[in-house]
Length: 517
Figure 1 (cartoon, helix red, strand yellow):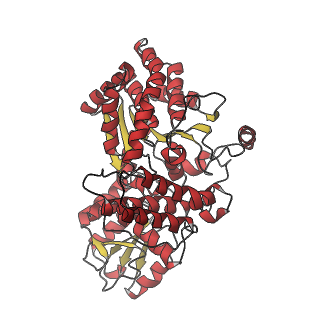
Figure 2 (cartoon, one colour; figure 1 turned 135 degrees about the horizontal axis):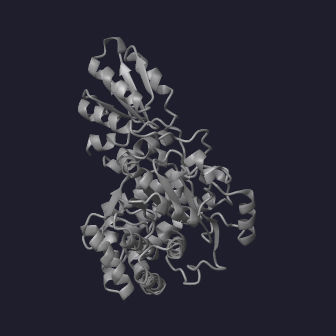
Figure 3 (cartoon, rainbow, N blue to C red; figure 1 turned 180 degrees about the vertical axis):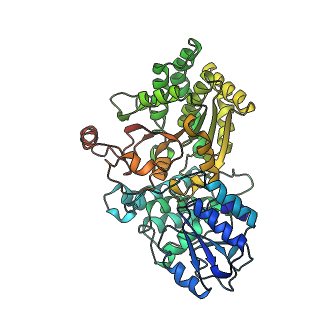
């Protein structure tokens, strides 16, 4: 693993800069500390190596997981509970160059990525036996693992037992164990796992966000160690394949009217924009981790089967036109029906806006069963190109835009971690920051929304500004609600939703199109 890549995950909210023996520090070290201070990184100056232990002890249970250490020390304290970066080689630490540190600090100084204040506690499996998190840890996650086992063709008994053991451990609240590896993703889980193990926590007591994301890390690692040469790299490939095959004919009927409308106008009208966003929103119901990917056409329409609780479509359309948006980043969610909806929306935006570039951010590893990875992009485009004329138009539009550098799928390891949005790496912060006033982040689905909010127990009527102000660009959230994580919903709206469905905040029947700028 490249230490500089990992350094990119050190941001002002999760990193402490330490200068040892400040009175004798080199001008170079002092300059680096000053650069990080200008970038709003917390810093500490200590007189001797013996003070380092006491200084870091204060941060063990904090959000700080990274320490940029300037100085020389024989032995680093708490090596499992922090990630250390230093210009001097040290045991249990990552060696980085002075140039890399200086460049990182200077690049971070362009952002004010401030974490929200007064953070509420995280969701946990111990929130209560009848809560969605409690049911998920006891039943849904073990069920997902076993559903995946069934989908694998001719799985040997020994492999099945390995997956079953993980499902049983999670469902019965077994102890959390650190099985991270030396990969980038493994390292990004390591500190959280080490701190959880230090406290003796079991699966239901760690944060739900850590439990779910770490579960998929373990599943991917298990699959990599057990898979046969004839098996796909993606553990969920069989489920995804069936989901896409079932979605294509249904989506062809849904997409045709919008593609026809696009051919009859020279501008993206408010009506067409609304139809495209609604189609995209209700496509989020086709989530293999929730529904098995079997979703009827009736459920996917914005009618009595669904409730649109927050509708900011007019506001985002006005922003899109007024600011003449030229950069859109879409954080993708599910394969199958939903990625088809994503591609329809992207094709329409690109068709009507010749100056627009879209970055389509997918997961770097298979997670949440049906989430999009880079191979899924081409698999889906190929399937569309061999389908109806409307789907062929979408595939052709995106392929041409891709060749021109206007449609750029990229894989993100960050979206596979248990990090909150305000701990985003430098690469993502710069991508969103470059967009500025002429940019828009479109966050798709429940997991991406939970990440933006840190998967915390925010009061539902919390003002979006109190949480999302850290983002360096405007954000449009489109999700059907599948977890107890929400903001910007008034008491009146909550009452309305409860009258529609008593489990409205996690049933997937209530949707939100929420815009913050």
